[in-house]
Amino acid sequence: PEVINGRTHRATVVDLSPWVEYEFRVVASNSVGIGEPSRPSALLKTKAAVPVVAPTNISGGGGSRSELVITWEPVSEELQNGEGFGYIVMFRPLGSTTWTKAVVASVESSKYVYRNESITPLSPFEVKVGVYNNEGEGTLSSISIVYSGEDEPQMAPAGASALSVSAAAVEVSWLPIPWNRHTGRVLGYEVRGW
Image (cartoon, rainbow, N blue to C red; front, side, top):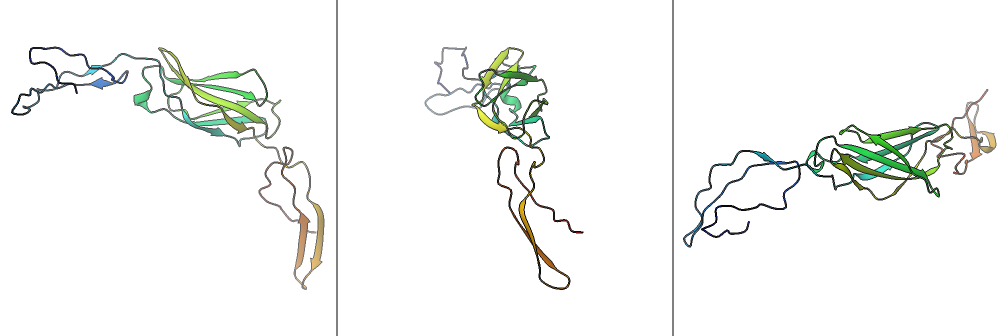
């Protein structure tokens, strides 16, 4: 802290965080050294302000068919800057110019799910998440790409063949399904016999 002239009995403390409780002590100093600190002042809370820190780790994906799941890392309490804190979620299909905006009023929230039957599986969306409190809207995150939920695979594996390897075993093989918007990520196959 800045050293204050010995004849001054008042100082303005700057660069404090909004909506945080502080207490203060004063120490006297001279050419010999620094004395004992005063007793702490009463707790004083700074005024609220618009939040300036946006959520981080914007991602998502997964979910069910016709869903867009958006997740983020919540903003810590000391960076919320006031009461009435919440999140603003904005998203649009990749290539679109119009944003859809949703408000998530819960401080603890870290997820938003948008449901709409018109969403096609594995569609890319541009997503950004911002913050607000009773003082106003704050900063928005940078844009992240999040994919809508998948549907079950719409095509069967091709080229299935079977080869008898013993009296009790048959080896079955097939061509893998290539990844695309309509097949999604194939996590596994099921082999059925009769």
